[in-house]
Image (tube, rainbow, N blue to C red; front, side, top):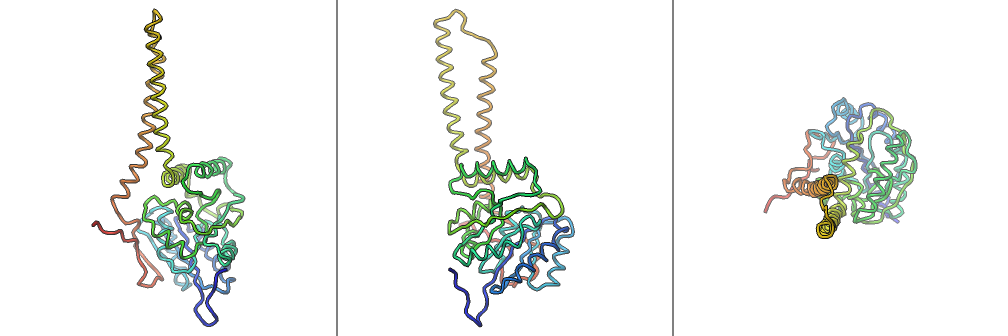
Length: 333
């Protein structure tokens, strides 16, 4: 059970990080629902940290208006679209709360679940993550591919990653600090939080359809997210390339024995072009597959050694001047 400040002392602070990208149609709605929900939590102060991830519409202007109307609003505007994982990281680095929640702006994840997450936190959980028990407004294909990905990742990953979850979660400050200590660029947030360990508990909820606008994760981005998740937390693809190499070598040896037997004991030992074509195409495909797997891991190494900042900030509203504007990469020694 968590202890809270005594009477007369400052109350603990809850920070809610809301990454936004082209969400002008829902910014007002998510803000109203967050405020109504969080004002019912009497034992915590709260701040709302909106991160504009390079929006092309009026999202940033609306966030400026929210800041003028509500002193509890903080706005962090990135210089361009860096991606959801980077936006979440930027918000967490600027959040001052003793406990921090992350929720998307599209209202698919209901803010009304946050008090239940806080109850789990008060009871001793370090992380309370949203578990998507039902998913409204999604096609059967998307539900099936999402389910398949989570189960594949669970089998391949070196750590257990909860099934059917997104980045909607609430974390204790110790978990946030541990997350921010990880400097990698391919930031699969739900996997990184799972990697930290600590006590993590699910909070089931019904995921709603988007309140407005279009999904920011079409099939291409979902596929990239899946590749990032598997490559970041599993070496199985590299091991698979090794096993494929051994399998092909074994088949090649069997083919050599077969050719020698035909040459020694039959009159016609060249059986035609079909088998040769199949063998060449098969070997070429395996080689390209293995090169692709190696390239995926090599590309991540290349991205890390460049040591560029994870993101850049063009505007900050409502933050004390002592808070960091962006992660500073360690200097070369």
